[in-house]
Image: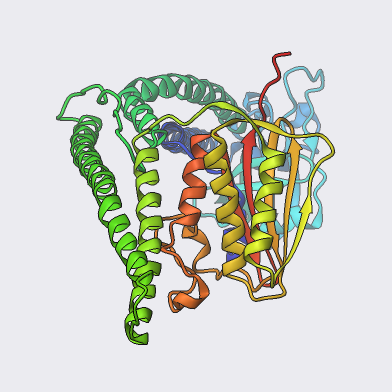
Length: 498
């Protein structure tokens, strides 16, 4: 039973908002109060009317049940004393005589619209007789339910002949008054609950209006891009009385916004300084790196005999200088993209770029199987052809460097609802799950143990893909599992003006 009740309570829909909860709580408390008041009033009224009925029974005494013994005598033979004068009893008065535990006589005074002056015998069932015989002669009122007369209030007293005389009055007037009070209370309290519910909802809504303003400000803040860049926070939440709970929440929220704004401003300043440093350092490093590479290549061209160790060292210097030069160029490109440097905005034949990129990749990775899927019609986008070529080259190089020989790499181009979609798919081992969330971040490398023989880069290739794609108003994506890895680039198709 307890579990079933718990499930029923859990199944009742509960209000979600504070306003609804406060309004519902107010209405529930008022309903409980009204129910308590109504119940107390009904009980008090029922008890009061029952007490009055008991007093009437004491006033009636045993005159009416005592007169039942003379009922069978002719009217002219009756002595007419007070004990035999049944006409003075109220309509519905009940009388019964119990002798030796057996009900010998039971009658009731007819109602006022009954033309007969004779008493009405009351047919009693066995249950009725048992109830009447069990009434103690203690001078107190008792409620009984008679089959022919419904509810009655009766009182028993000892008679002169050793019998028990029972007098009774109907409980119907008491029950009618109680029922009417219940009806009036239900109507009045129901109207009060309805009015209180509407007025309470309006009052709670008015009282919580400052909190709604705080929530609106919080929603505007939550919609701001806070991940990077300069962020302009909205105006603070309107102030409220600091002595109230809502005012304290608004004040604390405004102070928190101030701290967040200061932190974002400092972060943006730090990012700007870091970008300027990366751009300046990359720009300044290009010349010495090129100089080191040039001197190494010049030394390798020396006609005289050079020890093998020196030749090997010079070759490594030249290779690392070339690698460092590529890294510097990539960092300089990312710094320029972060700074918002505009790219070229010219029509670019994306189909031709994909074809050229796969041709270059096939030459660089003859151990792989390269496939190409192009649409029949050329696809044109607006952007920087050189940077888009770099995006395709980085994606194909990534597939070549991170998959074993014999892997099939497929480059495909298609259009979907005004968007050009370039995908690079391979059936290699896939990207590890722990690497996938940050695969487009800078300096992310799937295998940090790769040696120089594998052609490992600095982990900037995919970050350049993401940065260049976003600069063109596109998006990048990755879906990878063992045996299937797909990098996708989506770019808006150029709108024809012809």
